[in-house]
Image (cartoon, rainbow, N blue to C red; front, side, top):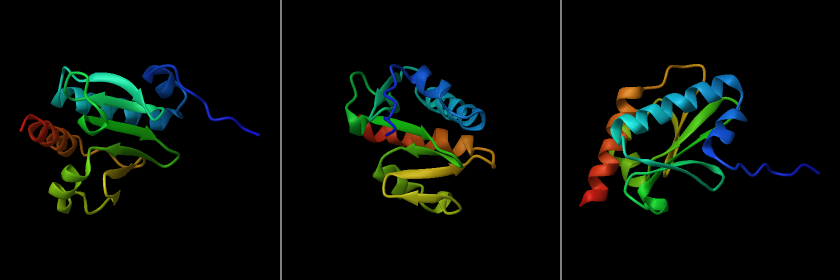
Length: 123
């Protein structure tokens, strides 16, 4: 029976990913930190999360995860609604979007999504 790996740090998580997923996750992290340089890196649900405000709880975080064929960005349902038309070419759910590993990340769009989420948190 295989046991789920419990990661000790975000770096452990990144290091456990296949090379193409790791590279894309690091690009996502870069986008998050470009939008909010003071974001706090942590693990939440055993995946990398970035608190956008000090001691940010789950709904004040952006989470990312690596998979075999894509990376997931979890910006919050309100952000997904706002950017729905711009994300139409990607597989998405209520609070997440999947970016395929075989295509370049839409970095400028991701930065705008995160900045929008930050603005909502400040209201």
